[in-house]
Length: 86
Length: 486
Image 1 (cartoon, rainbow over the protein chains, first blue to last red):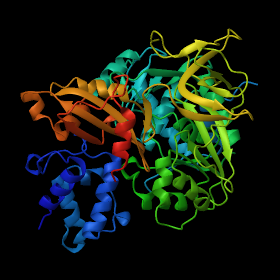
Image 2: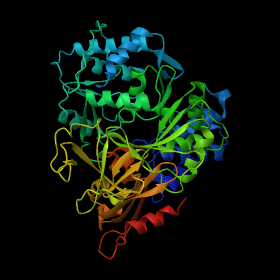
Image 3: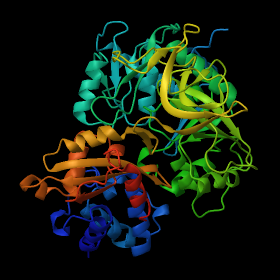
Image 4: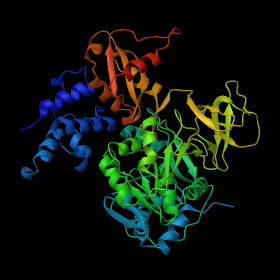
């Protein structure tokens, strides 16, 4: 399963409170578009730790993993279920 | 006594101790011999371009050993090189390279050429070497050329001040285009130490930063407050091998400062103040057992530095008082290239001596004991995650959007980043105004501003902006209103 809607809600609430969630595409480049900066990245990581119980500190972090809502969703799936990752 | 040459020293280090580690990067180390060999390859690539002797080049390379070897190649060639931020918009980069007269732009992954024979480098103290840039938050950053002599003198001072030598392991947190690298990368290599490079892709991971400090036995740390905030966190881990901890001139949160002596129980602690134009100028050593409440003093001028406090009437204060800080340093630039009219380089305001001074734009107070305290800026500059950002320039960019009627950008204190930017704006009537939202505006900013200058929060209203009694946007009110949140 993916977490696209949950992540979209979080990103919009946290970084784009005046924007309607459906106007943010799952593949929109959040880093190039200036939505998430390095402080924003810390917020996203803290949220992932709380919401999904991921121990992000121990995980190899690449900014690419946070480039879009779809990428964050993939990241959660990959990290939460290592046995099923390819 | 003349300063020792940076590049001659690095070559000597490589000949005497080729296997000694020069760089630690992603779990590997690069020895001095290997680094010099990589620089030789890069020189061959530069030679194959057939450029005139002394013609400037651009170096556009994210942090890596190959990027450092490329810079070393330019040093060996005595070739001036512009080192801009790799995060600048493409158009800005093109214009910068043009302004600096770059004949070619080099990247770290150009094809490898044949290694050239290294001729013995000759020092040319008056020749231009590094060309750094100001962070100019929009339009064109200014090019800040440094002479070989200025870099040689600075790297000598840094070596002595922080006891740099073959046993030193120095953390490099900032990107390679920051002036801070003249200390943590280049002074370290001059004195035969090992530079522990923080991978920019992982620079916000506290676990990674802590493991770098521990695994590489780091002895010297220089970083912006954000770094200390990141490693403090919820941990009682300490790094007793660290001998010198340098915080750089930003304002640092009291809570963050208070955590430093526990993290580095055996370290001496300094506040180091400088500008890209002058390099480090003032230093204050803090007593870990008696940390200041409120702001940290800027301290005393470094050897050879002349610091003036100039009051609003243009008079140089000889005793205590408030005014703008002017500095002359042995490490300073020869002036912006090309020179800009009314720029900030000036003769002594009272005509004493023939030094050139840099007007820093920082308002300071000289205490009765002679030490200097930072009061604030006399313009609209703030530091956002270590990058000097001009709020008015961000406002100008946003005001250029059709959908915006008026805008104010303020810097809101942030415990981690130092400051974050908030934009408050009234939208224009009609279709263009109806369409604006923070997603579109952030994207609009990203087209011409560096990442650090894109407002973190944007509030769009149909109300006029709050004004002071003199009709200016009430920035203090906007700062207060946005500090409370989160």
